[in-house]
Image (cartoon, rainbow, N blue to C red; front, side):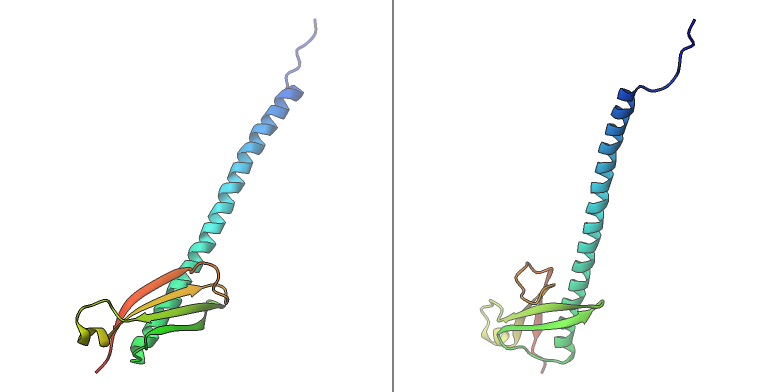
Length: 130
């Protein structure tokens, strides 16, 4: 009588490897997505800081911006960030307030050409200091 040999057949081993490779591919995809999301959130956070710093500069220096667009750049976190500031009069029916108030919109970009979408937009009101 022959003794039974315990073990896996070649087909069972191949099926197990296929299942494991599909599972590992899913894990790698999720890990890559998490890494991208972390980088994107870091860029958005730093861009928000750049916009808020620009707004703080306007407030601290008591500059009352003229209506129009201004471009500039800032260094933060070891990188250069590019911002564009749009200043406009508020849409209010009261002329005195309209002249002494500005709506400031600051967009921050990662590229100097500002062709890709802005990473963040900060909108605020700025009153003329007396």
